[in-house]
Image 1 (cartoon, rainbow, N blue to C red):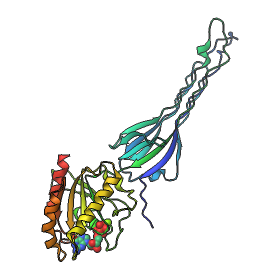
Image 2: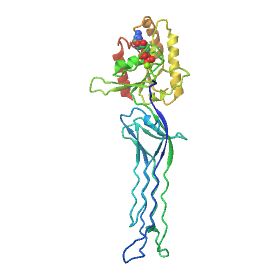
Image 3: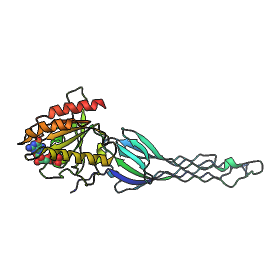
Image 4: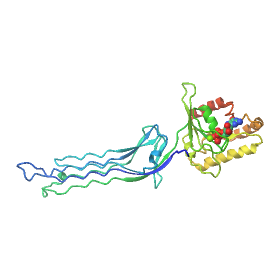
Length: 332
Ligand SMILES: Nc1nc2c(ncn2[C@@H]2O[C@H](COP(=O)(O)OP(=O)(O)O)[C@@H](O)[C@H]2O)c(=O)[nH]1
Ligand SMILES: [Mg+2]
């Protein structure tokens, strides 16, 4: 079965309409023609989106697409005010951006637990006839209607939060590295595109240091749809993984790096300007050593690039990488 990870959803929400004002006259035993006492209608409920922890994606919005808040109750006799409609509160995962669907205007970035945004306010309640009595109109037989609710089309885009992003061509060893530094158990296999959806992992350095979170996105390749690149936007540093292999030349690796960089730049979202660490993986392989020395110098000359080498298989070099990542994350 294809793993499901829903990071985008289009929904329509509508706030509640206001309750109508009441047309009512005071009735008492010896007062057959009492004055107007119809109360106001209640306000309709608004629609609020809020960020909740422990939601792993937007699958709550996969099937149900329309959400409507409660209407306000009508006013009553004896100046009774109708009850306000309850707000409709919709939970989204922390990291969800809320856009107006047509204009794609960003309405809110719900990137902290509990952050919320009111996307539609409820319709106002109508005034009861008690308000319409005047010297010339003793018995108003009308009241104001409640105002309708507001309907808004929204696009929700969930962007994972992690300190460091693992990116690179398929088979570079991203999943194996993630499983080495965290308790995550992504599928590791010797064929491309084993990882189909983004994977999160948490590395806990010796206390009191804060945990570091990693996200691996499925292998990227030029021309291939990069729908998961948005999950790198919130990271502080990118680890570009490339694999060393026998027979590979310096030019091969530089062109792989160039591919990754152009895919990142084409996505936008600040990815091109992010700090990057180039991780040359599979240093245990034959022929790897010779390549390394040449490459390191060449890549180090490029602005914003750090180059490290390691073997996700033997573990060599991983500690040094983690320290480097910690250092980079502190800078941000
Ligand atoms: N020799 C060697 N093999 C590795 C190393 N890292 C990963 N591999 C292997 O490379 C293949 C692809 O690894 P995987 O983590 O799934 O790559 P991903 O597509 O980048 O996530 C698997 O067969 C791994 O066992 C390494 O450092 N040395
Ligand atoms: Mg993988």
